[in-house]
Length: 566
Image (cartoon, rainbow, N blue to C red):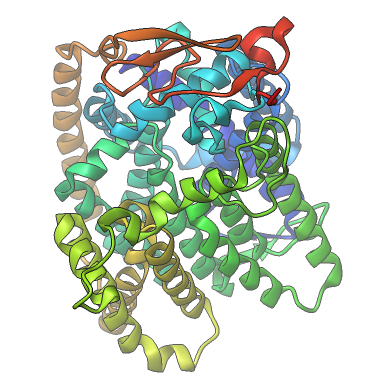
């Protein structure tokens, strides 16, 4: 727990400073409210830091020392700018003892709930392995030949790698996912407080509705609870979809925007695009989000060729590390997609890449050929729904989203503001997920957008018309009462935390029995229980054949290539 809290503090400070640096230097506009600027800066900073670390992993391993140097260096460079220091002073003026107690209580609660052993199957299958490769060797050519999953590039892994290496015996796998849970809860509570105090805009209600639905699903879904306490990029993608949708609503609300002196004179419509690009570097399931965010930016900047070119340059810089890493590890810039794959010595055969991609996107691969006396599509859908309870939940959310879209249709025809863009994200996202991989964890963010948008419009209209607070508060008495409640909760959390066996770090991963194997000049290890976890590398639960070291002098750090037939 203590390790989590310390690294969270470092991540929060660095991400905020990096994000604020972007907001202050690149945009000729800024958001009026400090809370909105804070959370947007956090998200922008997280994306920039993750991709910066991914770029650095092409050169050096992402050790703990490397991570600390990058974090401290970015923070120091950011605070050199006077406007950043001014923003920090404004933020400091908003802090109070009550707010500090809320943040501390929330942090302890999240740490207590998430500092348990990672048990998510995909993390044990290849997430830990990907992290270990990055932390010990950086990006390695041909790693896809060891295990197909290792060819998947995610900037999320590069953000985790420096802080979940051998220094902590790979015991902090859930560190960054739990940090994002903390950020989401903070955003949710801020928006809820605005609702209580009658200070809400439509985008505040959306933050309340979307994050509230995410928390509800998290409370009832064992699968999502396992994902949060893991290294899985599915969690930040779900939150990132909601955050990008929220910024679309915010940037189209002119009353919340003021002028800001900057270098590049960009408008705030670039922010959803940057978040969309950042999301796709985490996982390709964010493709629909990026597509709509790109159209959103082009629509709003269609009259300024200069800003469009600048926006293209910014997004290209952000996506280059992912593309180069993909080419270096698998020969495919968008692996596991076979699009633009190169035939290089360290790549899989094209057919093998296509087959691997089809394993998650084709229902026929899941359920086999349908009987001859049935309609294939209906049979596959029925098999899919009955295969897993969460598939039924996904279908219900899809139908609910369709109903919300119909209910919103009249409003959408009258407006080209934020609502129509959110609808586009939801529709394209749901279609994409059903085609590419119909699992709710891939598309949770898309499935919740329209229900959240509908409820936020309803709440906004209701409380705007009635012009009343959700809860009438007498300032002095309410603040004292809230402080007492927070102190009681904080005291309880501290007592529980001190008695927690994971007070410093989560418990270590269980040992994995390994079998040493040899193929040509490559020595690797294979787990008996089909799960490598964070075992010594190279480790693969699958048989390896026809590969050799790319540069025998560098051993496994030099990478792997296909063995040429003699």
